[in-house]
Image (cartoon, rainbow, N blue to C red; front, side):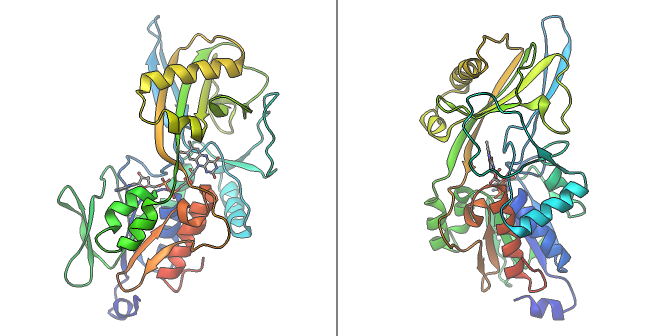
Length: 348
Ligand SMILES: Cc1cc2nc3c(=O)[nH]c(=O)nc-3n(C[C@H](O)[C@H](O)[C@H](O)COP(=O)(O)OP(=O)(O)OC[C@H]3O[C@@H](n4cnc5c(N)ncnc54)[C@H](O)[C@@H]3O)c2cc1C
């Protein structure tokens, strides 16, 4: 599809909107295949749902405390040979570490039995490394993609043009509801399918409390509001707590859906109670905050499904975990598959 542009002697210009792992995996592969790739994201940094929040608070004695909380995906695993090979490389590069948490008594079993991986020193590190050297426009939500009359694409944020000219192709690498809004004028069929994907929400509590750490690093409670409880300061490559336990607690999808539109302080109080119950004591909270992930997890796909969408006539593509099979691995596979569909030189 790019042959005429390649023949004209300049590399195809591709805009990748969404700098989570799917977009960045796609962008990196396209760049290796000779495309000029430009990354756009509405957030201040890359990584998407592979996220780490920095927090600071002042205690009653006036001491300043700082902490980081991996409030998006806590960890991920690999099933496919391709993703396992990618993980091996990232481990060698020092941006991934194996996480072998001591699980709290009563946690349900990790039935998959697969190794868990964590980016270091923070969750976006893997994406930052993959995105290194690619031009990035951050903190700008793309609210429109427009044809420019000569077969190219332009990106707009509140009517303002983004980037330094037209693009030969556009990749949308974002949760399906957000992609649907941009797709609708061009591929209403894709927009409809994207809107129908039942993404699961997740309310996440980030909290700190002074005290002795428990003899475990993480818990998978079998009942109640919480799906995951993670002691942040016990994770690979994270700073020690300095006398504080730093907790990240993810609510279950069902609980999060029930409280999706509740006020943050209501949710925070309920999740603090649930975490206290998981800890079996009443912590003296030094810090607490919640984050609502409206689109946290894609449903696992059953059977064969297209790992990405690519329309060669429009030069418009879509990738993301909701197409690639859920989770971090699904996001990566989807991004790679789209790069292979766009540029013949890029294998998945
Ligand atoms: C709480 C939580 C727990 C999770 N647990 C696990 C787990 O245990 N295992 C696992 O494998 N996965 C887990 N995941 C899911 C995993 O994080 C995702 O599947 C994966 O990171 C998705 O990558 P992506 O590139 O498809 O999307 P994202 O990471 O969401 O990236 C999309 C990007 O698009 C940007 N964007 C959106 N709209 C626009 C716009 N209009 N303009 C510009 N930019 C835009 C966003 O800012 C974002 O950076 C979890 C996620 C969450 C939130």
